[in-house]
Image (cartoon, rainbow, N blue to C red; front, top):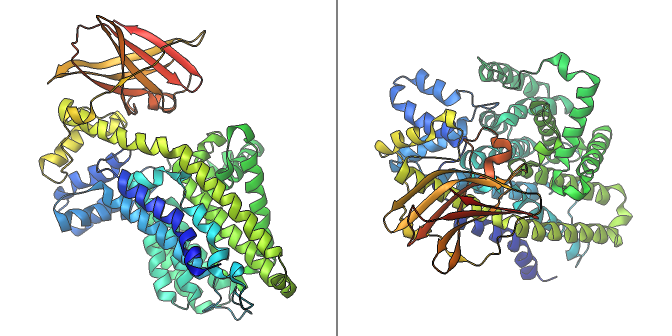
Length: 555
């Protein structure tokens, strides 16, 4: 295969992903961005001493200490005078690009810390199919697909969930290249990215012990103990699960189900809910095989990355022990699953090529890599098509929150206990946050032709928070859903009764994390900006949620 064609195929998932992030990234906080970044920047001026500023940086947020996300925002303000929430999204993008490059380098043989036999993937003249670049094409289609769309556009998640495994891989890579001091330094940074960052230093220590490098093991231990003690100082466990509860047979069984479902979550579909558990179980068996065959002596970078990812899955399972397996399918966790499958694929490929030299002269590797490539290309295409609407609506909900905040002092896409509107207003009053100024006309509703039929037996539940004339528009904002059913990115339309009949309009999507049952009702928010209408006009709301529909006249 021509080199230019190879690079062209490799560029497809990367360029598409980068382009989507640059196009849909939006400068507005969302959900936990408020207690993490907005609150931190508001409190920072009052912290006059180094110790006070350090305490703010290290402060616990849920299960995590998101120091890196706060530091990026702080540095952003120091350099530009204001915070741009897209910067953290771009940092996450760079971390993902770095991860793909490190995986490519980690599959190469040069510079290993162990004296094990190595090879180059291209073992025969003209065997371009089995060149390193060609064999790793599935990795790009796994990493740069939008099952994990939330990690690309949610600021603190981009800066934390993506960066933690990237720094872990970098630490293992540097340790494998005899840059031990740098590896420990990167591991210390990883400690303050996300909850699973606490694993990197102990895994480095374990790696030195496996390799009998006692001096580096002792040095890492002397750094790890005080670092973890400092990390867990005044730490509160939000789940409040005791060890005895976790060790009960029922909990252990559920823990295994959560763990395996997470590890195989990239294959999730409601019609085959068992498939992720099966796939995750297979990867645990494979990791056990790698441990028993001492794969750490062959490719320690890939081996310890897999250990890190497996332990990440176990940590998530412990933290979510009270939930069912559906919790592991949240998009903000899918990057770990995608990276886990990519690393597993590379290790399988590596074992195939090393196990028997005769395999390098036949087509087995070609068929294996080709089949995986076909599967990952299909997954990439389906995922990007499926989640495109969610990416568009995620930008829309930020725009709508920006509009509601600027004009009416309301923010819906964050829990009310965080006081998001007042906290963001405080930040903006100091010019630390300078959002886009949105005109009503730019987000005005469009006329749409719909047939507002109701699914038999279904009715509409709704609430109206705003119904007022603003400039030349009627603004109607609230929530609506098919009663008794979980809302998931509904299509909501607002109808206005005119002299010639009912005219329906599109609405802006936003979330309602202020609702009491936000777990089931967060995706119920809507805002209509209707031209040439009055507050006294008769209105109707029509909701389409999958195969269910409901309609209601608004009093």
